[in-house]
Image (tube, rainbow, N blue to C red; front, side):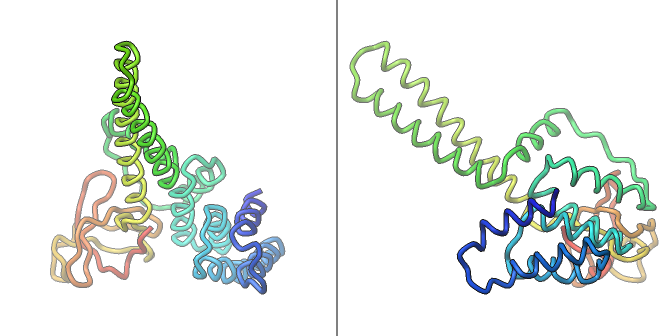
Length: 251
């Protein structure tokens, strides 16, 4: 199912381009995956992504190929990237949960306030581009209704048009905020996946720092700061520490 979706998405993007490499790579990747040649599938899906043709389905397929090839951290990385682009996709969520079951670290997440959960659920409900178009459309409507308020003299129409203009303007502002927030979740590189079998988290950004705890392959962290080759990371239970940059890959 996902492979078909990826084909359709890429066909729309690269239609009309003669001799297009990504189209050939996609066909080869899908064929290799169906034949159990996961190494070749990984190579071809990666070529597609490196060419700039990115879609949730391609990330998802690449995650599947890595998972079948027993590369857990890579699988989780690309499932997470697919989830950023399509946060409600049940196939992505199911496979990500399945991959998580193989991660050694079982970290209890700090509870978040209801408002925070609701806010980010709304932000992720639509892609940044859609939020941007909503913001633009509601701004235009706000301008039109405000024009009605200025040029019509009947009191009832003026009152009604002004209220609608204010509501549309608020929608425009909030949609713009949601677009920026969702864009930041996708493109501002803060979340990462542990890529080494295990890594010791230090109290300071050097090898002489005190050992705090150990993280294992596939665990997700949030990057808080960077100093040289070291990154300060925070895990979902709130604990922090420093690890070498080579131990993680940014989602």
